[in-house]
Amino acid sequence: MAEVDEALHLEVPATPEHVGRLRRAVRRWLRGVLGDEDEDAVDNLTLAASEALENAAEHAYAGSDEVGTMILSARREDDDERAVVITVSDTGRWRAPADSTGYRGRGLALIEELTDAHDVRPGPTGTTVTFRHAC
Image 1 (tube, one colour):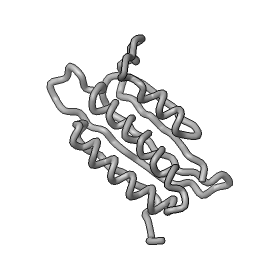
Image 2 (cartoon, helix red, strand yellow):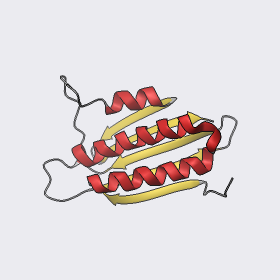
Image 3 (cartoon, rainbow, N blue to C red):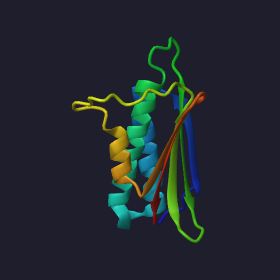
């Protein structure tokens, strides 16, 4: 397996075009960290990251005249419980999910289903979504 950086940190404008770029970057990083033997985890974590990024791009800066920023960070922890931890954050405003989601609005539910643990922290300076996968 090729040498992979222990961590990934990318900060980009919160636009739909950048969601795809970050999704591809996190997939490459995950493949380097998890290897070919855990392709399901690579797929699940890539999808979870994509959902969090799409939420940041679509909702965090809605109603703002300026494009905001979203940050993707990923690291592996090699302590007693080895894990991959991914964080997506923005500096926008939290928008609570709508009561009637229709065919949309399932991002947080998907993240919960696809990861071992997750945490969503909205605040006055933005929202941070963190999730982990034991490996």
